[in-house]
Length: 111
Image 1 (spheres, one colour):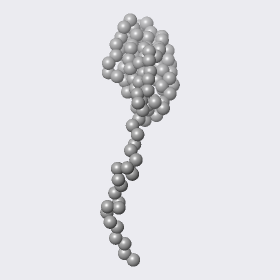
Image 2 (cartoon, helix red, strand yellow):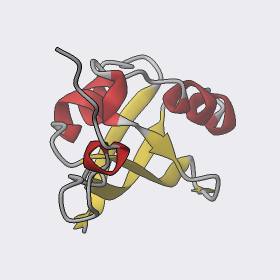
Image 3 (spheres, one colour):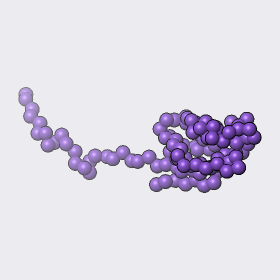
Image 4 (cartoon, one colour):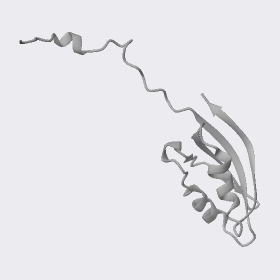
């Protein structure tokens, strides 16, 4: 037996192709208070180096930030399914000798 397959049957219509959904992100704006004697610029460089438990959480820090009276004000995005308290805020809190306080100014899902 010999079968011939028409190539047009091997292509899928646009309706049949399932699109990969875009990752939904959370944006958070936070502040971090550097301990006395700790350079806030160096501390922010260390904070930006935080790695999440899952690379696909896509933690990204905004290049724009400000430092006032030893407090760093900055923004990051992370996958919505990530527990950002655990993945970011707790890690900053564990920098005990370098950080004396931190807080969330606002956070929202970006859909």
